[in-house]
Amino acid sequence: IAQALETSKKVNENTNLLTGITHQLIRGEQYELALPFVKAISIEDHKNNQLQEIAQAAIKSGQYSAAISSANALVNNPQAHARILLLLADKHIEAGQTDRADEVLSQAITVTGTIAGPESQIINVTESIQVDDEFDRASLYETIAIKYAEAKQYDKALQITQKIENSA
Image (tube, rainbow, N blue to C red):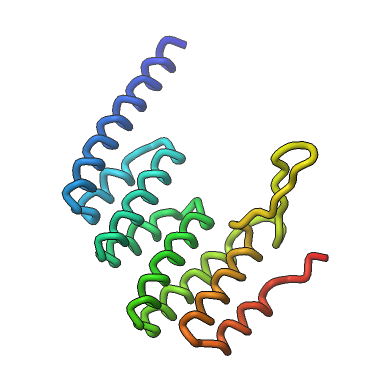
């Protein structure tokens, strides 16, 4: 037990050190440089949170390749991966870069297709309150279709809506 506690302590210390380095690099907008430190974090949830933080900061600062690199590292979290891609697609659509938006949305379709579980899911907040999961496959496909429509690629938007299975 003592050895397990010592190992756990070292993992936490390493995570804290790596997180500290990552935050400094994010503040300096050195997103690509931060990625290897985040990938070295052994606690998966913490790693995913840091990757999402890097991706969002990179998008805000216009460093889209760093955002893609960070999103692609979210291999065990396709919902977060797809969300980051959709944020990036928004930026390309706003800039009128429909070809780039199409590339990112195509990747989002592929990632969304890997989400496990039922097409549509309900989250039980309490016994009497239920809400739709906005990050299940069907909801993400719906968002992708909307992004295609915003980019005036209506045929692709229609194709994506056909991917949504009828769960009724």
